[in-house]
Image 1 (cartoon, rainbow, N blue to C red):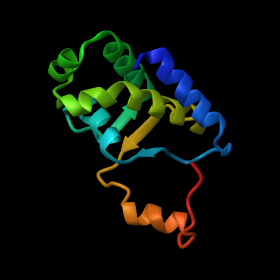
Image 2: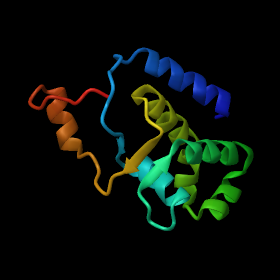
Image 3: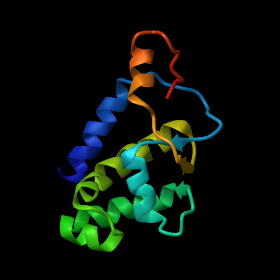
Image 4: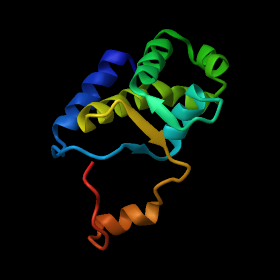
Length: 126
């Protein structure tokens, strides 16, 4: 999928989302977030800056999957998610009014999501 199509799809999806106010911080969780973190921070630093996400978007949109694998030392499956993931997280940072996010060491459990859907746990606005 080309960058413009990804950006259009993400923009349309976020337009349907409820607007949220200022947040204290942005924490990214899950496989795509860890993929971005590993690609950008082999040093282990968990803070990801918007400029780094911009770089990742710039680089991955012009490279082949094989080049992404080599450049960012990620598996092929993860290489395919770097561009769309970076576009989504960039939009999240924009909506949250932040320039940085922290990549969590933890993931959101499927069970927690199911409990939110069932109304057993209140979701935090995103």
